[in-house]
Length: 249
Image (cartoon, rainbow, N blue to C red; front, side, top):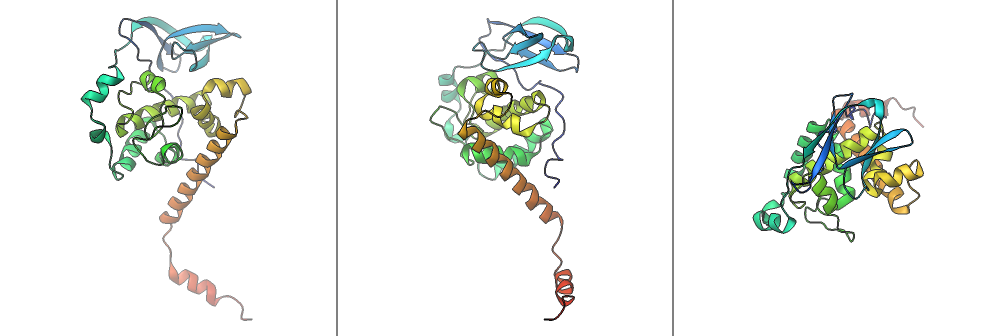
């Protein structure tokens, strides 16, 4: 079943940056692949370099020291406080019409070379398409970005459908690259965080995370099956010919 063929390899982390106060210094790490990643700080662990995307050390990527070709100090771009963002971008104006969401998913998918059906399945599992959804843990918007994660991704208003989808797609893109295009691990990390996936060397034994991964993959496969059926027009005469060929009872 060719349900995963439309996912192409991700070769860059350019969409994932850490946005903190402008006065705070950060580091731009250039990898051998040509990718550039702005991180808060790094640490050498078990012979690898751990790049921390935030000061909280909850989001990080491990890379081989040989894959790093340059490190330079930079100053991060400032972001507006959330209260100021809400005042300048009314929440009602930020809401997308249902018909706009597929177009936004296709645009984000094209920008990151990801299948928009996968993004649609994540949106369905995360918020069921509600732009103003807020979880009990505080995750917001279509792709349920936590405030700290949204800030790191440069998302100024999580309730703006275009910003939320762009940020969530960039994050999923980075996770897919980190886990070598393993969709299950990337989805588990999207739900529980990469630290939990790395700690358990696989999908964490959390019932919520396991259900989430199964739900997204099932929904994605169903979308691809429906797409394949649409691409193969139904021919009634073939069905009739098959019926007439059946042996009489």
